[in-house]
Image (cartoon, rainbow, N blue to C red):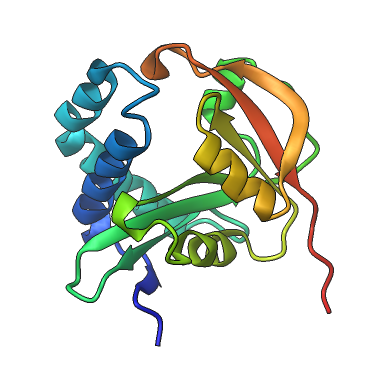
Length: 184
């Protein structure tokens, strides 16, 4: 039996999901981003919870394919991982002038608490979120752990790069793409 329970989110999960996401941001980007990055995310938790809840309710009304989110709980019921994926380019990418891509599905984010690293949880979340679809994602420069993880799972740079924009302190990022995995 796996040590983490993965399941699709419900609107009632928004608070736990957002808090885990923010704590994962703090752990992941401690050496990359200025302290103000995490502070702004922590300060925005109440608003982010409400926006997240509303977006999940709206997404549930959309036809397939649509954006979906999952969370992972440990044996004590604590949320220790979050993932979101969905079709196409997001508004923030258009606003920042992202280079175009023909890949029609995106891994929006995947984060696990540092204490779960090496447990296989990230791979399980990746599998549930994207399956065998052709997929792209954006990764921040200076995040070698994530780069190694995604490359192990078949992702490679496609040449797309840009600034993250002001909410991410204009850090550079690049796009990784994984081709569809053929059915056995």
